[in-house]
Amino acid sequence: MICARILVFILLTSATVVCQSPLQLDKLRAESDEALFNLDYTSARRSSQKMIDLAPDNPAGPESYAVSLWFEQLNKTWLLKSKLYTDETDTKPKVNPREVQEFRKWTRRTKQLAEAKLRRDPHDVEALYFLGAAEGLEAAYAAAVEQKYMPALRTGSDAVDHHRKVLELSPKLYDAELTIGLQDYVIGSLPLPLKMIAGTVGVRGSKKRGLSELEQVAREGQWARDMARVFLVDLYKREKRWDDAIETTRDLSARYPRNYIFKLQLADALASKILAERKSKTAKPVTESSERREVFSIYDALLHDKTLTPQTTLIQSRRDQTARLLK
Image (tube, rainbow, N blue to C red; front, top):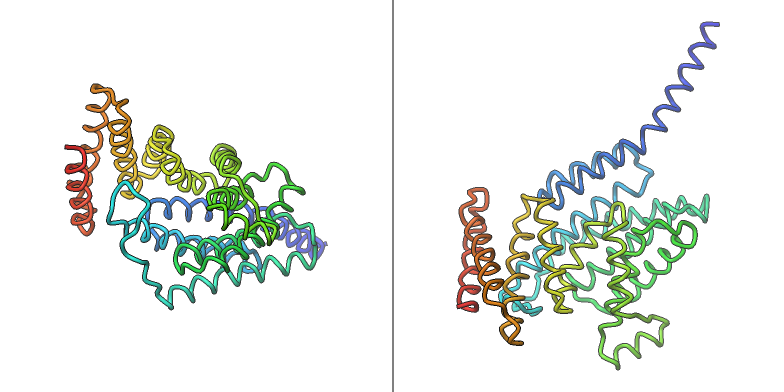
């Protein structure tokens, strides 16, 4: 009888651990995302490592770690822009081989774990999602950091194929729309000759469809919701949808108050709107005056934030550029 009770206790305990594990993973993943979007990369990776320790066979942990490495590089690339209110970058990003190797290690591990799950069950939606997510990260890293565009196109196409399969199996897993929407927008933005080259390998896109897909992720996604908003900020500015860019950056700034980059992007979007309306002669003096005050209140608040002392030179430089443009 005692042995039977012990056996029942062990089985119940094991079942409890199995049921709690996804909840614990989700909690750690949420903590990692919160830290990441607040630019606390160390805390984000600490939470990702805890996910890996908790569930070493689950691709969620390695993928979370890879996302943190990629997002840091994405922010560095944005900060390299020395010309405000353009898409130009005067300084080519420097590739650190050690950082690339670290990033590749985690995307490779994510794919290995996802593929192992798919060998056991080819219709494992979670495994398909993480396989596509890792491929999408590799494509984004190759294009934005290493500037290797053809490998990025090939890997990105693999990611899209896997995420289309995810949506066939689970139509409401809107996070999978992120890679699809990005590829649709990027391919749809290419000049016609390049678009035709992409078409020869079966890759087609549409800017309008891509934006719609990303907006759906921003509205209805679970884990990719705020990442979709990050992308939409730049895409809205490219499309001169200033009010949408302002609304999105204002929302991100409120959600993640320790992220000074979101605040700089809000100032950027507001100033871009002012300049565009001046050029088109549609500026309204009262509105422009209000938006101009908001731009400089953002810069001044950042300059008075003692936690941002290392960024003072950058922020002051951007404020000075803005003042010259808006005089």
